[in-house]
Image 1 (cartoon, helix red, strand yellow):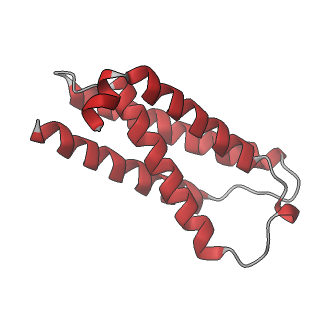
Image 2: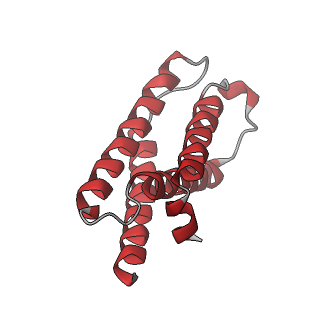
Length: 124
């Protein structure tokens, strides 16, 4: 499946853009619209959605290229920057705030996706 998504990187890129849009949309919802007590679910959301976003963006940009380490690092930095701007965006949403902890959880998902993708490249 990874090989197909790398070959058809426009599909991977489209999925990554849709995921980034979904993240922005969810971040735009005022906190009063969320049920209380989501705790661990929100942390799992952060970890999972940024893992998936990173993995699809890696498949779109890296494509198993010879200098894949440079491309992986660049992609990870792009997604971390997006995670930071996502938190800053929440400053302007009613009832929402920024949390460095969310960026750290996002980063765990981002780095896990980078590590998994690196393993898939090394197996080729």
